[in-house]
Image 1 (spheres, rainbow, N blue to C red):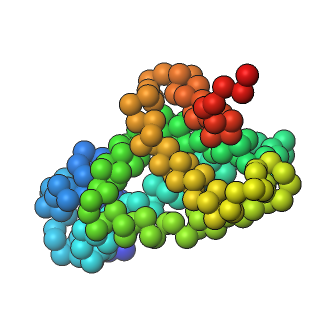
Image 2 (tube, rainbow, N blue to C red):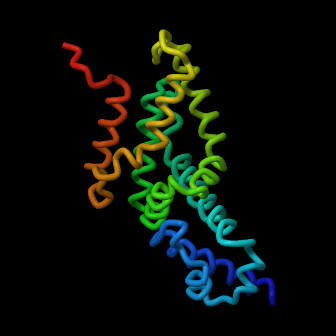
Amino acid sequence: MKENSIFSKKEDLINAALNEFAENVYENASLNVIIKNAGISKGTFYYHFKNKEDLYFFIMDKVVKEKLEYISGNSNNKNFDFNDIFEVLKQQAKLGIEFASKFPIYSRIGQNFLKNKENEIYLKVKKRFSKESDNFFEMLIKSNIENGNLRKDLPTDFIIKIISFIFINSDQIMEELLDFNNLEKSLNYVEHLIETLKNGLSDKK
């Protein structure tokens, strides 16, 4: 098989996999359907990937990488104060919503991933990406405790746990509220989530 043909077939395979994982949760996604829709043989598939799990990791890597590149490329870093954790979270969340709106196939893959919480694949994928995100949140939270933006009377590990959990699971928390056909409405809900995290629900009056 010629080299150009090999890479062309891999691109067809990836596109077929994106569609299948966008339509189905991992356990219901069919490798046979992916191979058929890609127009390749099983031998060609196994040339590129070990099995369905290996392919799924590749797809999730692709989704996360492109989302991070979008957020990084659209962040207003010059005028952005990373010492204010709530502004950081607000911008990151808003760009995440914009990304989901512009790339709905990636959004559907992410939504299907969240439905896998009872399965081993969910834990494997989460472990794959959690270290980097945990390190980011820990650094961000510790610096904001030091500069007075977060309470110093609460244990640091408790604050890290609370903020990390809410932000990482924000898609699930906001699932029924977000409307990717109405970006302004969705962004307003993101604003409400961050403001609630910042100020709580109690009436300060």
